[in-house]
Image (cartoon, rainbow, N blue to C red; front, top):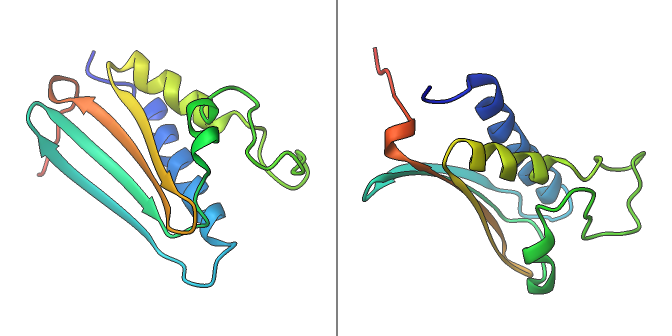
Length: 123
């Protein structure tokens, strides 16, 4: 099996939704998605110009129910499961989720897949 299309769609939905929610808080709103091959991997990167995430939060960001802004409740935000689901789906597909962020500059969510797990039909 190369990959579960439903699960991989959920992964993309999760990282794009996070970027969209992030840029709502800033004046200059930009989201960019880059897809490229490097060595034997396919990288999908979602960049946003949101407020960024402090370095101390990055290691725990993909934990279940973890929220950077603890004042957010389920009524005002998500469940805190999106990135945890994304991380576990990526692992099941032999891939990895990496998150880079700089406060005041935005965030980049990297989905890294081994090339052997993806098939692209351009027809």
